[in-house]
Image: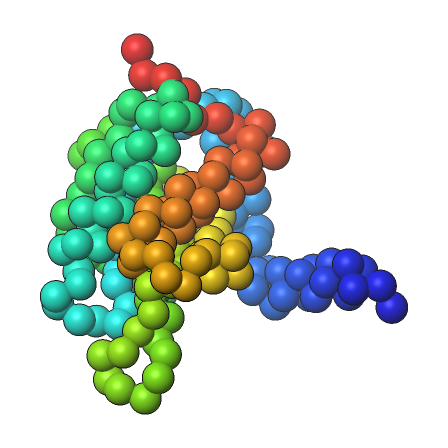
Length: 193
């Protein structure tokens, strides 16, 4: 069979496995409700969960992530976003806390990120400069709208580049993927007035 066809079938199969029926139903409802408004005015960004959990790399990762997110949001014309310096575990988001933050900050959506460094070699602290940046987008009610990621290695990242540059590229790539998905549903990041 054609490699492109096999790749397409593989992507489709993985997509079906990743999205459970209940989550898909909730996310479709959340996207539909947000589509009625047709815009996202205020976005909350929580600090990313960093894997591996090494204290020395967290703050530099946070700094690069938020600089890249800020740059990307400005390029999309979105200026109304807030950084929330509270850790949120990517795989077990506290929905009540998320709702409360959205309500108190008059936010339309919240982004829960994760930055995962690829481990190479046998040592405990040996990891490469390549990363996978993953994002979960929730509406103000805590419904998962979409999840996306950007893998700098699979995207052809340079093996000799810096980890900071990989985090920057991965963050911008994941946000671009998220923006494309939202536009497919007629939802837009808009300029705040």
